[in-house]
Length: 213
Image (cartoon, rainbow, N blue to C red; front, side, top):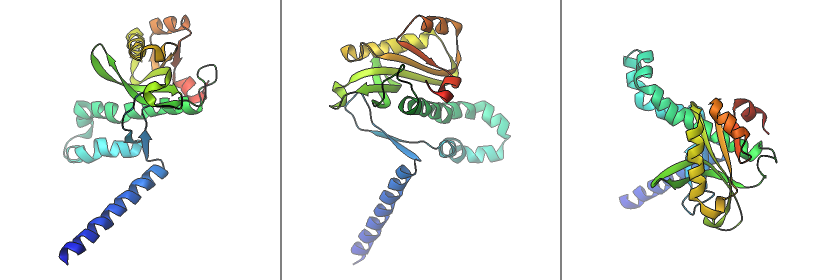
């Protein structure tokens, strides 16, 4: 009898977890990322920046922030945590949202599959912030129309473009005509000059990110 009661409680808790998870998806706190270019399991991540800040900074480092001078703790260790686990992912999701909703037809055709992916670059598997693919078949057979990188706290320079070119090449013939999208707030003159001569390169700064095109 005790086993039956325990099972009922466990099943009840499981049901609550499922309902809670579904509601988080419904209200937009959690997003499901389908890889647009590779056949692999989707990944889920928090989209609300306040929740990201809570679970990345406040919850694990709360005692330290309370016991020590917060400005010192922030400068010593939490700035990097914030940039890598909050600021960076938020900006990457903004870039994907821009492609889905605000990119003009001269930049990308509407209706493609948009999401993060990965590529083997120089023998190392690298995460790609943004890939856009077209086609209704398996992800591994779709045509890649864009590969992008979003950098919230770095100045974009020519090496960022070089890495995107190698990422595009890793997809082979599927991505031969893919555009290269670079999202950031600071752009080096060398990169801006190079992009001006390349119809396959698009730089999306903060102004363009906010206005679309």
